Picture 1 (cartoon, rainbow, N blue to C red):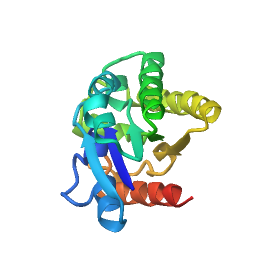
Picture 2 (cartoon, rainbow, N blue to C red; picture 1 turned 30 degrees about the horizontal axis):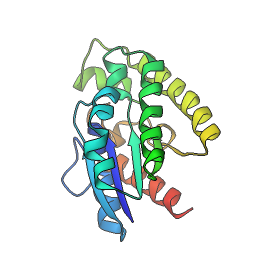
Picture 3 (cartoon, rainbow, N blue to C red; picture 1 turned 30 degrees about the vertical axis):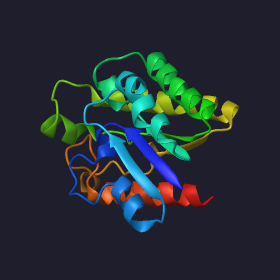
Picture 4 (cartoon, helix red, strand yellow; picture 1 turned 90 degrees about the vertical axis):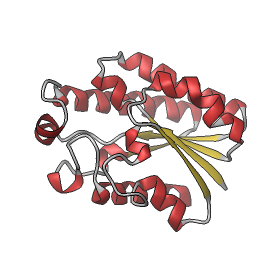
Amino acid sequence: MKIICIGDSLTFGYGVNLGNSWVDLLRNKTKNEIINKGVNGDTTTGMLSRFSTDVTNHSPDMVSIMAGTNDLLMGRDLNTIVDNILLMIKESTDNNIIPIVIIPPLTLPNLAKKRWYSTVNYDFINSQICSLKDKLTSKCGELHIKLINFSSIVPLEEDYFSDGVHPNEKGHTLMFNKILSCLQD
């Protein structure tokens, strides 16, 4: 099975050694063809604009879509994020590609303020990620699309984050285990 993983730095594997991101683990520990299309700093608008090139044109069997954190860090509207993800879902299903929507992990506010941007209200970002989860859970339920919730998988502890925004290798291992169990369902 060919699976493309589209997303931002959380998909790319920012902050972990090569081979240790959840996408790399999925590639190395399954027999599936896994293509990482995570781009550091990308937003749902960027992903939507490259979706045909990076996903549809490769004719995968499945695509994982994890997006929204950078949009929220930039102050983008939650409804726009949801709409962009729904458009990626539509393009997937229109091209006989099975979409899986992934809710990104929450941030670890105290660590993120020290190691990322000190001026961001990470508690608000986390509340928005929870709202994103609620909205997408409802929409994916209506569309019969599988949704994986990484926001409840990575503990909000320093042992699981490199900088408060990006999970470290322990966090990526938890995300890999979650997606692997969902793919086996």
